[in-house]
Length: 123
Length: 106
Image (cartoon, each protein chain N blue to C red):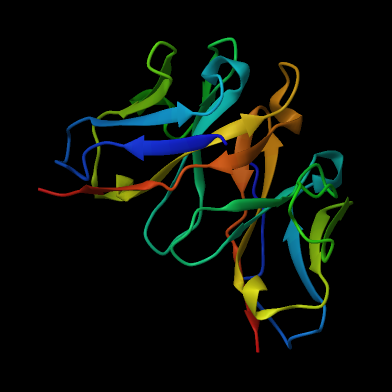
């Protein structure tokens, strides 16, 4: 059974870099596309970006300048880095398997989600 | 930027049918996806590509998408269906989520 587990610091100082990892177990990380999605407390979902099976990334335009998604296949880990964080970046961060065929994402969907990790940005 | 609009809340009596709408410009030309999120839990995909149900999702869940509106329909509402529901679509290779609808079984 495939499992996704997010991990990383629960507290990040303003202006610093948020770094999270998502460990994938039970399946090959190279067989799928992967996404990061976040949810501020009490609010809705916001897509951060994806990394496809070829290693190509695409980001939410509103976050693109601050975000990097990468993969370490040897460790079966997806990573997220977001720099220059502010209190507005406080959220539960989810990694999600992004299922779909082909290189056109319009038919892809998030079929498996991690449990999420809460990151608070505060001094 | 592309926007998806959902009603903030929908209330139905147990056993009745709930319909949750998601509106966006020419949404019918795109695929619509629906996720269920219960308090303290991660979202779960309940409908993909407009009207397909993932394995393990009850037949009570169905979806449609035409014109500017996608609709998630849940028949025979049960207490376990109380949750937030989010629609999602792709626009120019980026993901857009609706604001979410809180479904309450009165």
